[in-house]
Length: 328
Ligand code: PBG
Image (cartoon, rainbow, N blue to C red; front, side):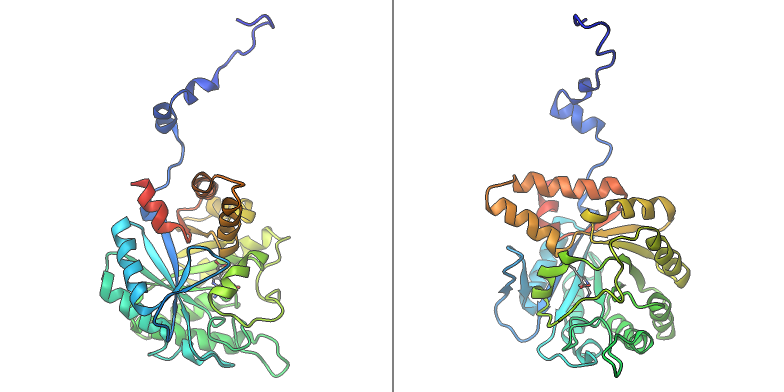
């Protein structure tokens, strides 16, 4: 007993005394199967191209993508999310609906490599394929045309599913996108292809490095379609709509600046919830670590644990394979 009365009356530190004790009482633990690796594949390159703002991340060649997928299986992660970087971009993003476009080719390559041992997912959005860099097609006044874009998404869903993808990830934040994609998949006989909806997607400064990774030519911003960081209740409206339209799984993105929103979403649904730890979140940790300012490996695990604690069942992270190996 201390000389200051009866304090401490209770000693929570008992449960923190040794690594074994801390391990046993941990409320959350990361598992490789819940990690999903986002990967970029670039058309027409014979060597992988480093993404300078994301040290350790590359634009893959078809070959190195296959290798990365094989490593992902080996590491035991849950899935891979594919992004295509086409040689030629145009106003409507035609490469996104070309059955021989780079994303479709990559889906077939990865499926040939991993079969059903890894869940193969594809980003379903036009920004990687348009020369103006927007997530949809533009009207005569240069605004993103919601309904004309939906027609393009329906076609993208079809070609991606024809290529063999397990899960499509509509990410353009057009109204009605999940319903249209579901209908297009069903009409083409792809009832078993599921939808991971980018349900809550904020207009974020942290997408910066991604724009380099997909060689985006976007000028301006996506504020007329992605959500305003000031709004949380609005996320629940997006959520209700996506569920009603047939989303099998929902996603919140970015992760770290929106843990409150992730938590609210996770508390209010009965479908799996994913969080996307995006390019800028990755870059921040890598940059600080490269300067010797933080302990890289510990910081990575801490951010992922935080995202999990907030309620994510699955986490998209550029560290997926590395972390999975570390967890084993
Ligand atoms: C849209 C899409 C983006 C990301 C994933 N899908 C970019 C955007 O919405 O601006 C960003 C992912 C990241 O930053 O890591 N195709």
